[in-house]
Length: 621
Image (cartoon, rainbow, N blue to C red):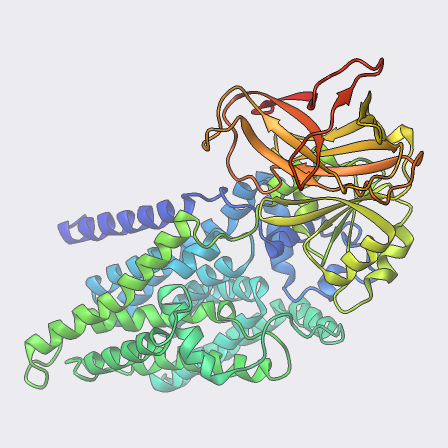
């Protein structure tokens, strides 16, 4: 092997290693997002078995992704399992194909090792590609297969070898069976032949390859026919031509949408700098024009489709990123005619082009790896909370369907339902009002109104970033009391007992329900305090680490009717308390004077003005 070949191989291995390292880092750290959980739970289900959603029609008739995607995820699930890390490893490995594809494509088009190295390097560090390579969906797979198919096409077009055309047909079919919109790249290949003024024999071989590809795509076309009658209309945005410049191009260049005015400055500057450098390329060719077509044509097709369906999103143009990177690599390495463009201007333009991509791209990557822009909410913490707190006669209600919760709440004891957007929550909840407790996730106002009418609100929590409201039936009985007490406060309140929920390993939040037997109504509207205390002093110097004070309504309560009185502590706690034992204690006081009511034990013995109820330990084991 020559020295130059050894150097090329070494650079290629280093770039591949960098691409792998950036994609494997924190691969399983983030919880699955909704679309990922859908893919893991349904795409990876047995493709020959019963429909995983239990619908009348198969998943392939309604889910707008090709058979190949379902088969790939199912097969990978059998090999690697269904953990976050395992299922994201498939798109990661598929996306690494793009490193080789970009390297080889740049060398073939530009005959320049520097351009090949730079194109592969830009692919390796691209934030948008890294994000999708760590996402259990098919976008990163498509992004890796698409440039490989394009490479095999341009190489086959320059050869009369049937083997090269066979490789192209196989790779192109694989890309099409991974993502339907790969079809947008087929006209780009035809325009390559037109721009390179290909010989008649090349067109003949292309036609034969097209026939072979068409035969392989018969099931693909049948599935498209099924989907055309499914009523699927997309779940994203409609066409917005202005967003191509201000949202799509920044995302496809530096990995994220930018704030104004950078959302226009960055893409316009990239266009200007690339055009300036390529206009003075000493080796004139039609390749930059073809690469521009590779960008423009799929964008136009997506705009047309998005006028009828809500599918206007940058990820549906992820297959044009190779063209963007190839143009950038060529602009940075092309031999410039210095007689037309002064050398200082050349270097200034190249430095500006590098800075234009690297600075915002590095910022995007840094924010992603720091977790500033989390991929998904903290579903595992939410699921763990309900595993510990919700019982088999409870119900968990979500404001909208999301498959992620059930992925983490496997075999959880409580039932779970979701409200349908646009429908009346009462229609969904009416059949569930026999439950003894309901946990509402989020703040859907109509659902809260229905539950506030039918149930007693016991607590509000924030768990893993999710707001949760805890409801219990209004009917109260002694069966609800977990711990008997039998203490009397003054001459108007008898504490029959209490029930304690929490703390737990998933959350330090505590819900304390006091069960009062009112003895008489009072003139003063007394308040009850619940304190969490410790011999260790809190940061403010007090022994009280958390408290909740409220009035149970002693002026109007019904004597001799059992009353549930709920209190919540540490509902929004984000940090653990120092390790140790803590005491829950209660008391009753006059809010106007602060004077506490005396407490008597079951036999009339004086207990002072504070009643310790329970000891809790942090951290919870």
